[in-house]
Image (cartoon, rainbow, N blue to C red; front, side, top):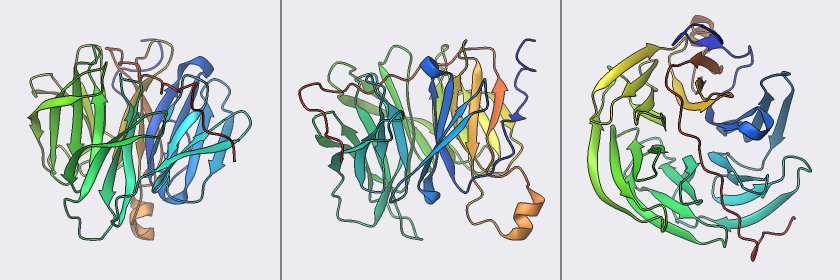
Length: 304
């Protein structure tokens, strides 16, 4: 089969990262982006040429998304800002003032053109104090849901009518009705209850058949679930802790998956040499493209 054996993970490169997360596919530039959260870095790879680029920030970089103006909207520990990847110019937008020891975690651009950002309790003993926020180009931050330990797994169905969202320490995945015109969410139902057998749910993505792909971060699996929650496929990854999948490639049939080696001892790193690397695998059903963040021309953040 062209492009590799179906469902067979391949190491993307020999680079390792402490906590690689939030892969994003830039179709216009044939480029894959991801963050190394704890090292405060945003990475990019031209998958055709192998050209790499890295940007460093002042605090942990939880998540990010691409905008409709060619910029990147970035969620640092508390601050939300824009990055121009061509000029490296940075422009602040807003700040999450939640008054607790939290940081941003998983996030994605929704079908409404807004940046959806989840947080996590950053204390060793996780408590359900984190939230999910909707951020728009005018700098408005709206808390949409709360009571999570580690907000994660956000993704949308292809028609934009359903939103998936998980708590990695729940561990569960919920599904909401979603209004792409307003960003309103309603009718939350439990989609999945998970454990360490398939893996606690980390980052997620949805394919064109409406199936939800979830990184089973505690079991070394990448799992595909039908819209009714039936497990269709569980693919072992070449590392214990995969963190998030995203679809990419010209046909959107390549899954890129990040992983972590956070807290690994030297012995564990030696035992699992691929931990913290990125992998790719070919799949049969294309993924749902992620929407670009809708910048508001009436209020564009000024470079600092």
